Image (tube, rainbow, N blue to C red; front, top):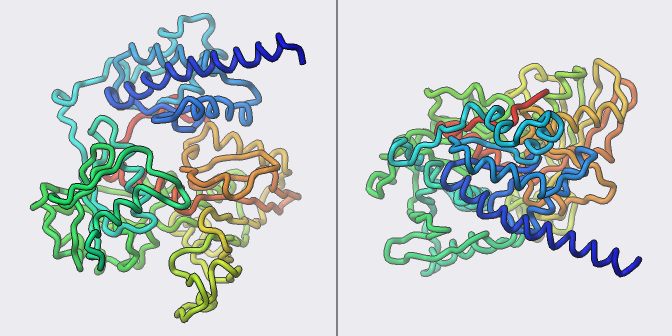
Length: 488
């Protein structure tokens, strides 16, 4: 390669870096001032680094068979910053491509004003809008609780969204209990360091994460807490302990002063609504004071099963879950009440039961009695896979099926739930941190006539936590218009 070619490659890269660096304050201002959440083909760009932005642009090449450059998205950001927008989710990558394909020579500012007319000039300063944040309390601070805390802090925006006000835990044996809990929030062996700063306020018994004061409340039972004494009112409590799963148990939270609603991060029992966001969240009503976010596996498989059933019809099938080990298992062989779970999680594949296949019917009644399921716990700490072995009413083939799922992941109302990857080299660790409920692996798809096998990856911690937060947003009335709107 000639020196001129080498110099040109490097010059092109540095030019892109310069543009990406200039995008960062624009993205931040749109978010914190206007509550406009930006993304690039579903990939969040808020609080991203320069390299993170460039990788998000590069991703488009995998799904759209075309390059997307920062030179296309930067003008979109500049134009958005002048439109005095109201709260919205705007995919600047799709907007840039849409303008390229359908702009017809119209000035970008005019094109965007027309596309976003429902939110143009709808911005109101907080003091005029009367908007207020919704108090959220985490009851329990384990794996899911800490990931929920990270997401809630990240999405605090300008202060008009969900606001994490407190965590409720049992007092630990160590004198420096708050310090230890803050350390677990700050550092995570799977998900890496917290993106921001964390300090401890011993005097007021709280953790300050990126400016968010989070009260640490010690309690032995839900009804014993008076949240109003801490200035917390009408709070949504997210119970991630898994101790109570029925209305009687979870109803204890509603007896506490300052609580209005409860969300369980596990499958609910009895007549509790099990919600998979994107599938049956329209069933949530103002009268629902206790809800369940179902399980991580149910969230991962239900959206894919829904779109397959809608297009092809599912006669029957089997779901096999290859699941990362959890804290419920033993580190080394020891007594466990469950079958096989007493054996070392880090050394064995462990066959166990899963209720996810049957639980799908609570969100998709049309699949009741059609699916069986089982699970294998494997020696990795995070990211799982669901193998969907299905018999369909209509025939299909690999190319058609993958093309359909790719389109769904990009342009449908399920794009937050279903992701799509088409690489022969991906492995489980590549999906750590994914905020999608599930990711279809196109290279592994099998289809022959009426029979198909789909492999769906999912971060059973981060992806599930993102689904939980989506439910809480709806419960709190924090929902914004999405642009461009779904086309399929």
